[in-house]
Image (cartoon, rainbow, N blue to C red; front, side):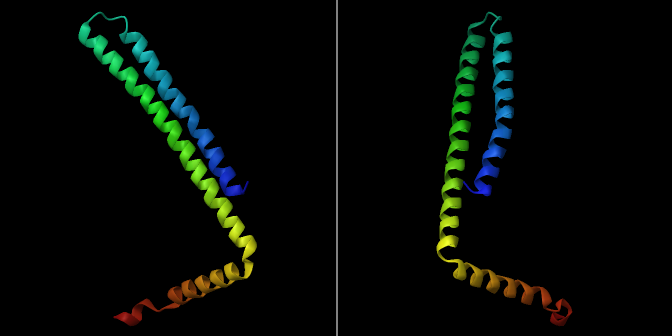
Length: 111
């Protein structure tokens, strides 16, 4: 696996505790509210619990998809560079020349 994919994997793993803390806080809130006796509160509790579960699932799925997509793109890029090193070197040089030319332009000549 490339270093970019590894870095993204590490970042996603660092974000996981924040999601876990959020769900723990939601569960604690639901626990506190569950002691109250009211039909409307019970309905709201159920709705918040449902939204919490949906949010956890959506966040987990989103992170998984992002990591999979990034991993695939990284591997494809790595494979292309390995198969076409001279094309990549040429393209990089062309971009460097273009950036150098743009930076070298005198901004006061336009006035």
